[in-house]
Image (cartoon, rainbow over all chains, first blue to last red; front, side, top):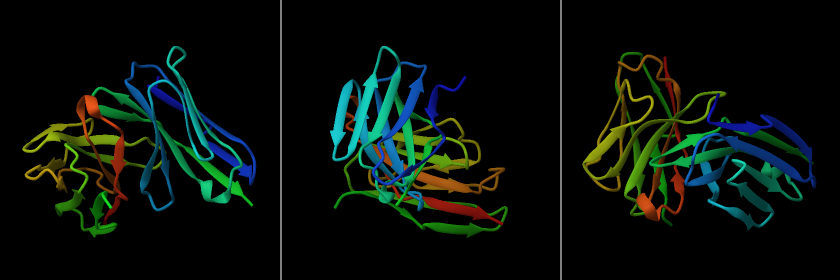
Length: 107
Length: 114
């Protein structure tokens, strides 16, 4: 069983829709990261969470440590949100990456 | 602005040749990392360094080598011993240790071996 599982693998949405991407994990962690990878390949760090909830603009990330689950929400989605969203576990001195959720938002 | 610079963005090499990928950061970060990304898989750790002149193997270090002579620089050499070197390579850095406040990633180098 993988240590980190993301769902869904692929997601399409119409502009304006509310998006949820899920991340479940099975190991102890010190923090969880949500990352965004654009088609060119570069990765941007969106959030680092160790508990509760964080919000940045239209993005909201939550984590439930007891249930080993995190969600990334995008409100009022826009075509420029189209990217791969990656969940990564901070496990001592290295990151464990999920395989990513590919999001496409159509106008 | 501070950040990580990876160069080149695209690299082509003939089979059997060694190739070195550059990673430079001006963030004053102690820890630096090299990851490999293949289609449909999560990023996998090749090597990491938490301090100058010291580095550790990651999960897939075979066929790769690194050096950390300066805090700012962590070059990765893909040697001819790497069986399947064609991939996307990402460098990252962080402050490291208990003060870790998140990771910064480079824009990546796509290596194609022909």
